Length: 428
Image 1 (cartoon, rainbow, N blue to C red):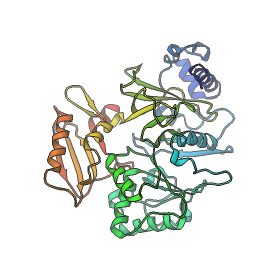
Image 2: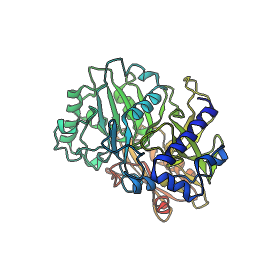
Image 3: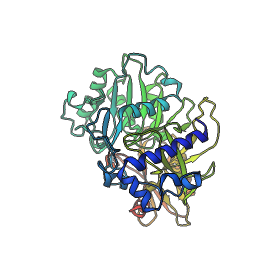
Image 4: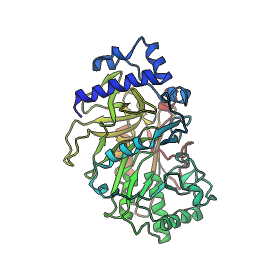
């Protein structure tokens, strides 16, 4: 789709949302705008961004388009994990979700054979319990109780990942073996934890079908990816998904390792200080849906930050390439006014073969604590070398390293590798 055709589609989405959703009509009218006022990109940017709060308060009647209810055919309901606070109820058309997923998978050659004519892939999910609409945290539900309407089997895992008991881990491994999936949809930190346990128990994670893996829910750290790739082997294609529960697949990782943003089903903007950023500059992702008949979103501020590179990718896809920076509420704020993103912290840590898990936490005083779980390959000098790199990156703020045996998950059940109480407090 050319830029001109894409913007025409954006204008159609604005007109549709204005005529069919009570919230967006009020949003436009409160700012003295009507669809016919949006003739150019400059006009488009006059529309103030929308947010999760708008859709949380308006759900369902204020944000569902006229003629739809939550029980309409093909409507799928979702609930977010609550990463940024209160959980968000939402809905999406099943065919929109499938179309966005197909566009994402299209950048990775390893996923070319996943959907064959007449076939339906078998999916297993291993992710924080809040990311599912079934009871999977206690481990006492049956396998049949945790099979969703689309056939996805949700595996059990404790709400606090590292507190998951061995019997529950064995249950998850047994169910993967029994279900024989084509596709594992996982939180990478959670799945790396599962591979560590599987290795300890002498178990493998395999299927008689060709296995594929989609990672999402949280930032895929280099530490987690190293563990997953080493355990699963090169024959299992692994793709990192850029996504949100309310929107589905916003992008995907290609077979060459680059992250691509879906600009076919969405109109993406990268915004900082109320202006579009240049290539190579970090900005928050705003999303406008294209042809979303159920819950159209206009300039939806995702809270996730990326750096568009402006580079062409040798994989052959023309979807824009981005570098993941992480959530704005997780950025480390330095005393000299700079910020260090979770993505930048992860680049400093690297794949770190001597540790299994880490979390950098910035306290309200601005200082940081880096807690990590070492493994039996750790050698004298590993911690000192990492401490030096982190100290340089986070200066003038102080950082302290702690070798620990346990690190807690967030309230949402997700395990975030980088959190900042300063950024989180400032967002409230």
